[in-house]
Image 1 (cartoon, helix red, strand yellow):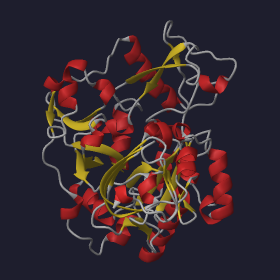
Image 2 (cartoon, one colour; image 1 turned 45 degrees about the vertical axis):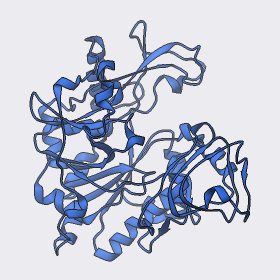
Image 3 (cartoon, rainbow, N blue to C red; image 1 turned 135 degrees about the vertical axis):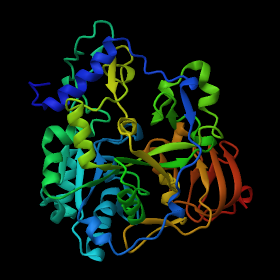
Image 4 (cartoon, rainbow, N blue to C red; image 1 turned 180 degrees about the vertical axis):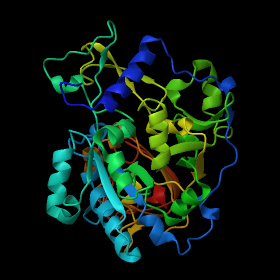
Length: 439
């Protein structure tokens, strides 16, 4: 790691994970050790903004996580460079949101992109073409660290001479050592930045909400997580909980749940909230906590077993040592969470359910946002979705839609009510053709 120029903060974070691996940490959190979280403040019930917004924005930075290539979606570029709607990419909308907020409130809220070595070049080239003014700002880019894979048999560094970059991919959840080791944490503090809003670059529901900013500042929490209510579609994903031993909030991911507790884990009436990965961090509190722990946040290990080449199941088994960024909620005594509305997938975002507002946000114009479940075998990859969807159907009157098989959507399709569509029963939804099953 030193040979590759990584900081001592990055090395310390990896060493903390490696020590947990060697010590035999399982990361398991049994149901008996936690309590359900039942009552949280809701964004829709928070007080409106007041006249202190401009002063707060001067103390605030927006950090977008932009290190993912989107390989699970069939992309070989940053996910944020994918077109969302009306010719705009995720990154276009993010950049325009920042500019509009600055103009409206007369405050140059700080903007940072956290890139990886895989996304930095593409992202910088895009900004140079489309948003050159942002690219010229100081501290615009925070580079994600690399984290070595560990040979599963020997615990030695993984070796893959055919493609050495696979030995040491971007780290997961390493925003905290990246902020510290790069010097950006100190740089932001010197500029008077106190509050950091962190979210994924491909989450268009993750805007800098002024009500949440005021709530975070007024409650004086060190850390705040935006959560959504779980539905049946979310029961396999992680949830928020409270640890019995110390009363702290924590995240329990599926990999942390013993098999015997799977039923409780998936009980959405018991564990009601999931992490959106929209996080608010008090930077002075973060610096104090890092200093108190030798520069490393004591995050629980996620031991992800893979092959050194994830596309070659015959390559050597390895452990990829990961942490969840949101797991930092358990590192602070004064951590909290707030319930926010759900955001939707690309298929729905591209439909007439959403519009792009003058503030460059994407907002629903329907009272009800339909729940859409597409067949992952045919729609998970963006290129496949686009081949099957010549035009996004009208979904304003749709309540729910489940698609099974490679159903092709042409132009002029209007869907209303609740439907499950199967191929080959409905092999093609043709341009302008009547679709009785959808009526």
